[in-house]
Length: 198
Image (tube, rainbow, N blue to C red):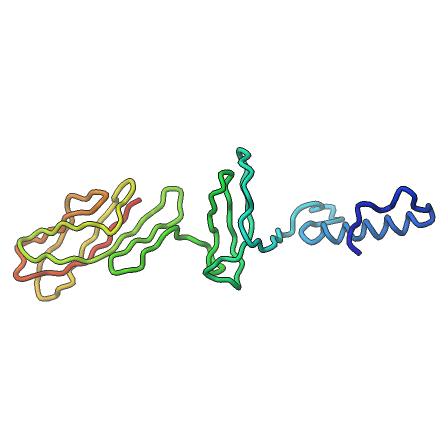
């Protein structure tokens, strides 16, 4: 039976109280025992695990300072796999897992010129792409999206194999950089780059 908070009733016969109370406590013990250790001298009351039902929508945040919410919910990208979420006191939702693995990326642009952002305290960002020097020995490159704070490092490499030219990056800013070759480019030269920052 399930635990019934109204039993024993006020008018319950004394002869029946023992059976009712015993059954009710057994039901309560079963319910609490789903996630907790019970009658364990060392670990009594401690969690064995936390079992979360799958919600249809995120809970409504109460706005109480210092309060957060952890829950599971069907994610539209994998409807057969419940995923773990966290909701802040302001109601902002953070997906902690994706495809049953840690969700390490807060944003990703999968294209020839793309970006990936890792979920850390200061989000580490990788950007990549390619461009072409068509004349002279410099090319101004603009990132598909800008860095928010700082550019740590930019690595450039030659994709066109017909020239022996040393490439370097100069003048890095949040929006891009200048690719510079060691000498003027005969014809055109295509290069790739990887930029790291946050």
